[in-house]
Image (cartoon, rainbow, N blue to C red; front, side, top):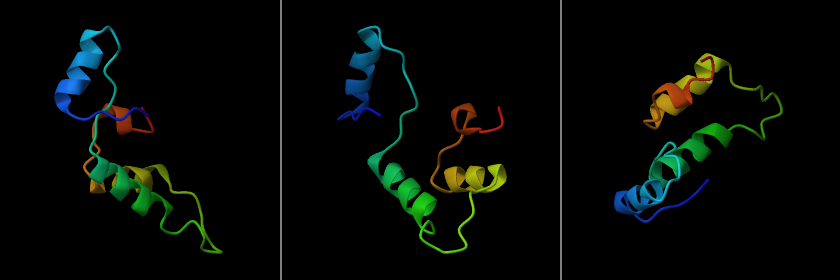
Length: 71
């Protein structure tokens, strides 16, 4: 994971010949971590199903082919 200051910074990275990956905000990253790990310490924790994982991603605005686990 790489952190960039702005979209312009991302554009300079790409212009330098690096592939453009998925770009999301720090707020989205925090929301994803919060939702993804919120129940990991529960004694009856179970891994998310593919549909549940997609719902977590979509809930924080992460959609598109990159976020499809069944693609």
